[in-house]
Length: 428
Image (cartoon, rainbow, N blue to C red):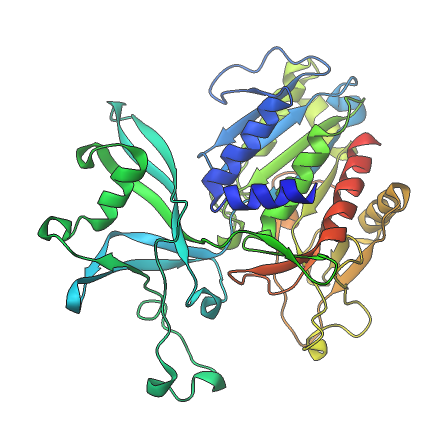
């Protein structure tokens, strides 16, 4: 199980590739692709299908033997985007000595200093000319070798570096791409990489969505290999746990849904984000296709339960003062239910009780997280999704260290616990 997770992390440096890999596993498990522009009519018990949006979000459905109006649905939600750096248009910047660096902009909220002095690569999608202007072609790209690096300034020029340095997003976070060795490379180095990787000509390229990614493979560490070190654990580890649960449980009475959203790190307010009505429209269409009418959909919502799966903060042994004194989850302690008095999380006493009972039935431990009252916390999918679908649900996740670092740290045991809990949730 853990090796599968590591392989998935390495193959999914950005949202587009994560969705492609999830889709491949869904298809292997008997799920068929549905185009949202087509009519949704043949919905039978046991039907398994999925739909994608923007190549960067995916929604999978396994139809239960009971109509939605009678049994509702069980939903696991996660997000496939992570903080990184997006390559700007006209990105090449030629410097002295023929050195070429790339102009970037920050995506989400990364710990920027963790991106220095490590091998990086490029991944994303390239848009090329299609049969008509309205139908361009999309090619996914992942350069599978170290290609770039953001280099630190030497301590001799920055004696205060170990006292903390304010970083400029525009000046300090520009990666080195290479050195011009041929006059033809001027202004064409990045395009040359794209053309070589995809086997296309410069004239075919219309645009791209490309991002930086850590080129170092995910790995285990610790005396007992008990820790996971990887970029994008937040939130790809939850995506994969949900996928393993969906494909690893049998058909049942209740309809199961796996919703993997994009753009959580930037607020979710996109057509492929949790703030979009796209998922609610799909569920409504399923209810209508089953012959229950509009009323059936709203009845199904009242009987549904959502697990919003996004990683939680593990207690850090070097910074115990940052954590709530009585609610600080630890690595290896099991799934974490997240609470917030300002309603940044969807969890309440009822939904927390439901999920903790699911964990008990699955035979896994369960923890609770509340922010230290003097430390502001983040938000996630649960409440954003509930604004379009008034679902009962819980915000939870596995505890990790260094959230939003270029490399985060998680627990092997927690991933195994989480998959067991998710399987129990979908099987109940």
